[in-house]
Amino acid sequence: MEQFSISQEDAVQKMLQKLTTLWRTRAAVNQDIPVYAELAFDASKRDFSESLLPFRDHDAWLQAPEAIKSACLSYAWGIYNLKTIYIECDVVTPACEDIIKTPPSSNNRALLQDVMSEALLDEALHTRMSVMACNYIYDHRQLVPLDFTDFNLVQWRRQQLASCGAEWERRLTRFAIACASETLITDYLKTMAEDTSIQPICHEVTRTHAVDEWSHSSVFSFSAMDIIRSLSEKEREYFRRTVRKTVEMFANNELGAWQAAFNLIGMPHGEDILHDTGDSNEVGVYTDSVERLIDRIGLSGAASTLSLPSHTPAAGRHGKGMTL
Ligand SMILES: [Fe+2]
Ligand SMILES: [Fe+2]
Image (cartoon, rainbow, N blue to C red; front, side, top):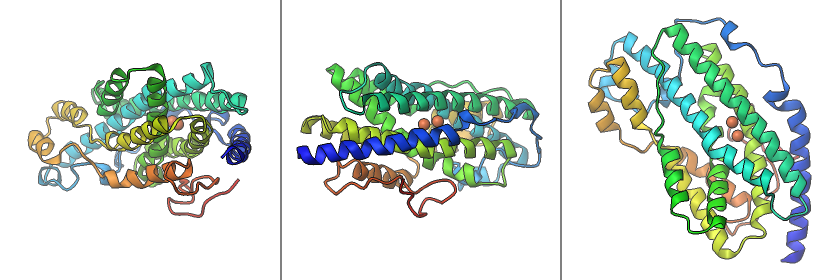
């Protein structure tokens, strides 16, 4: 077991070093980001992929006037980005800060601080990109900006932390929810990142974000490999359970946000849509990714493989894995 741990620690070290090298050339924060306010706006294009709407097959949606549908898709962009901002600020940032401020005792201590401080910079830029891209759409469409704070993912995380009885549990909860989120966000961004039919800024912002998040899923999974080595069986089980529970909340339809948007739009039969849609989205889309994460970090009982995940925006979700 000790032999396995030492070789695993070395392998993780190599991967984290390669990720930090890649970050210097690939991360959006190290590139020139366009001034979004100056990008051309195409009023005829939709601001969001209709296939992602949880009520896309509902009769009331299918029969809604075009102007109402257009406003709904603009608010879908608003909700999507606001949820992204909450994930960046309230879910991922605190976990990065935990590792930066009090890194785990590991030979990879400084490297873990390096990759987490890089991720923290990335998330700050993603937050800024989301803010700018939301306001760009609200301005061009002349829509009242949506204010909403009660995302189910964030509320559930708060409840989980409040129910923890010890600091180790709180810290592990923050890390497990962030690890799962950093794996799931690539799937969350994928459709919009690949949809070239939508408003150019919406596609471009999501594509840029997706490229960074592909690296983050590796940063968090390799960091998890390092961190879980020193955990007890009880702590490992707690970590695995929390990662799996995060999937459901991540896929949540966030109908509270939709209720607020429908109120602003005056959506015909909005209450019926909310009632018939329900909370759970296509959890299956996310379950596979999180099970791969559990496998990769060696918590499933199966042998873990030290390669980067294959679902890059460019390679496609089932493309060939890229081994560093
Ligand atoms: Fe991000
Ligand atoms: Fe991230």
